[in-house]
Image (cartoon, rainbow, N blue to C red; front, side):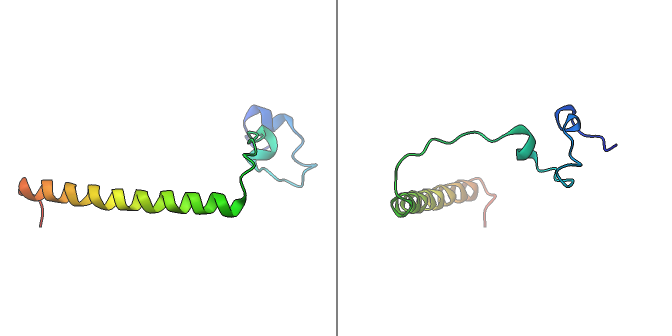
Length: 74
């Protein structure tokens, strides 16, 4: 027998064709639908990602400047 975690070992994985996908045995968290259209959600998430990229670039520049001032930058 394969050495599996106890809950999986108790399930007859042979009947499942040796499928050992974790989600099959432990379940998945239910996600509440927010009733927002996919396109609308993607537009919002894309805009947020662009803002995060801008902030990331600003922080990177500040870190590099600080390193240069300490004598560790190029």
